[in-house]
Amino acid sequence: MPSTSQAQQKAAGAALSAKRGEIKKSELKGASREMYESMSEKQLEEFAETKRKGLPGKKS
Image 1 (cartoon, rainbow, N blue to C red):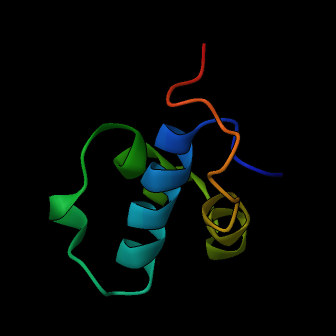
Image 2 (cartoon, rainbow, N blue to C red):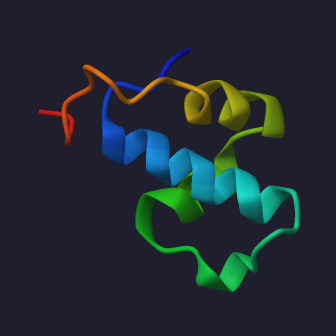
Image 3 (tube, helix red, strand yellow):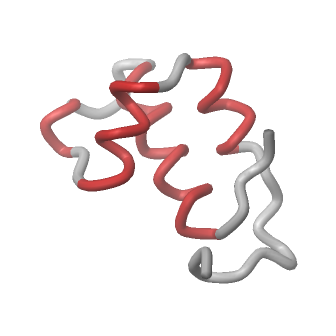
């Protein structure tokens, strides 16, 4: 399932980094923290790999 906005894609990337141990969980805020807790690494990869071109900045 691809991301529907650039903000969602960035949040998924941050959550994925935390899942992989590249950044600390305590550094996550808002949507990225919720994604970290509720989604698997595979789901986060799918959201994070979405191309940003053509996506709106925020989901309306």
